[in-house]
Length: 327
Image (cartoon, rainbow, N blue to C red; front, side):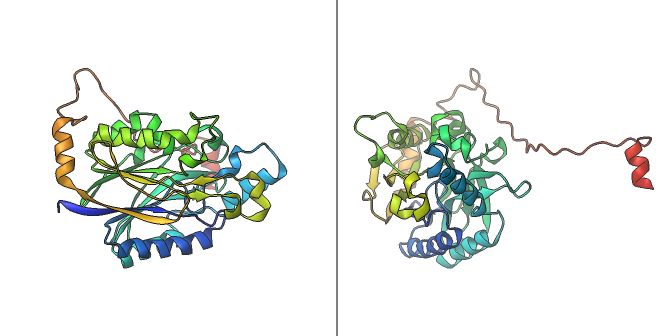
């Protein structure tokens, strides 16, 4: 493991509700991130094909149309879109974490807020579905589960990811910190410039606060990355449902200090050279899951079972179903 490595936050506008166009742009941006020398590039929450902006609007015919289009434009994992992303990561020799709207392959009627992790060798490392969609997001997304709270071991360090207000839940953060994460991707839909002056405590203002807290508590680097959105960036028929969001992407060191910020409202690939000696120094002071823990007092258990509403029905030898099947 080399001590120094470059991290990249991709702050860009997807082609909202357009899977093909967003994929084409993502492939281009992955190539650009690879040319910076970064070993890891992180995109925002559900970047492909865009955040569920419509969920925050009042019920209307237009919102229903946007909701069905959202499912129509979702991504299957694996599928042709993930194949293209894997090839782009391999060609650029860079790991990629990108938020996707994941289609439930069984029901094809539910989508999830999913972070997709892809290795520089061109294979899917894994996924993480948002455990609890926030507020109006529950109109758009299903809930995740506990079997994908993973830390992935890479040549330059251990990486992890959570979506947006999962950082507010605390326990998912500790589940990842306890696995020794060293580089964490905090994926957000956008950032602080969306805050109206009269509502300083609204949803978006927590982005920097929670991301810096994770970095400090986990003694790890955090890439807090967000996309861009404006009424002009969504299809014309849905512009009345959209709002302004200017990214606010940043990279935070293991002491919780912001060491790089992307320009607000502009597309950018933000990079920073990270250093394992800084991680080691921070963990020597406070290794939250190691010498700074109290396992005799606290015990966190994660249900890693993969659950489904569809369970096999046992059929006894003398049942009518069994006899009918035999016939």
